[in-house]
Amino acid sequence: MSDDSVPLALPLLRLAAGSLEVTTLYRELRKPLLRYLVCLGLTSDEAQDVVQDAFLSLQRHLASDGLQENIRGWLFRVAHNQARNRQKSYHRRFSEPLDGEMDFLADDATPEQRVLEKEKFRRLAAAVQLLTESERECLLLRAGGLRYREIGEVLGIATSTVGDTVERAIKKLAEKCNV
Amino acid sequence: MCEFQAKLIAFLDRELPSEEVAGVERHIEECEECRNRLAGYELVNGTFDAYCDAVMAAKMRRPIPHWVPVLASAAVAAVVMFLAFPGKRMEPPVLTPTIAAASVPGPMPVLAPPAPEPATHKKMHRRHPVPAVQERAVKWRPTETAVQIAIPAEAMFPPGAMPKGLNFVAEMSIAPDGSVKQVRLRQ
Image (tube, rainbow over all chains, first blue to last red; front, top):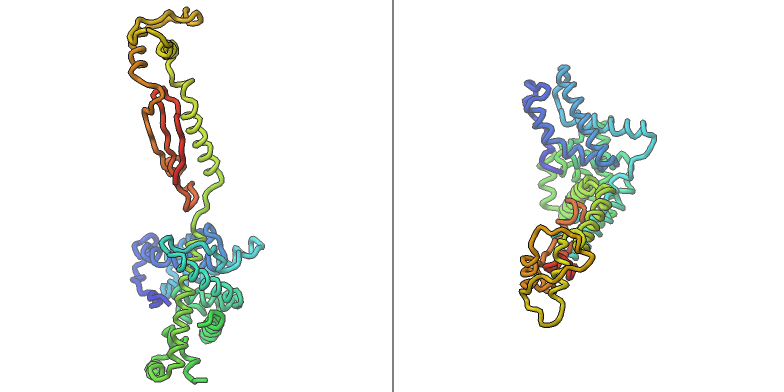
């Protein structure tokens, strides 16, 4: 898990729409949000639209004196719900989660490194496809730096359930990837 | 099975209650099996993280619009046409009799006065004196290469239109009369 899992403690009491703090939040959270959304199955354009909408909602939320605690969890929840709404309104499935092209290794990688990395990712991708939707979402939110409590808030499940789900998912991946 | 195994992932995620953390840390130092499992879980975490990054990088890479290769091909075709058939546009009409005169074998002196113009050109009104052109024609040897240029592929295509990994340089030798002597592609 990345270091940014520490809860954000920004001076949100002074936060106003368009202020420097919103910009700081945007810079800090845009990439994790995008990554979560594209790994969830959205296209690049859809993910960027959802992130922009989420930050617009944040501005409205803060301008109307909404709660200022756990903004990161709030943003992920809004983005997650918007992504699911899009899925429902378009009556379609997203592309398979984590279904990325395999041709994304660094240009300076040696052929041997490429083969090893591809094989490692191939095994992981196959294992990820065996996870349930809930397990995938928990892992993705956890990789985005959210704590179990925040993940529970985003997905609307208990913190203890998140712990069990994450543990089950990690053990499945470890077993399938032979580690 | 070791009773601490159920706590390893929560420990890794710093989700264990603080009063349990020290006990798990002590146990990990003593239990090789738990140590190995913890290392395995960390490896899975790292791989999953890297995979998410890679998926994002792959999905966020914008595809080249369909019109770009078409436009690039048209531009290349235009350049080739321009270089392959320069005579009709570039060669000044005054060169025609000069070259003809220079190529006539025999004792004609190199800087001889202009030969009588062919009948078909008689009605043409010349403003510039022919000898000057003739002198240039004598100094130049049309078969000699005057200019050699090398155009890298990136310069011929719009930015981003070149397929990744493909690169070449077009080398062209252009004669003094403007005709292309040689076009060669090299990697």
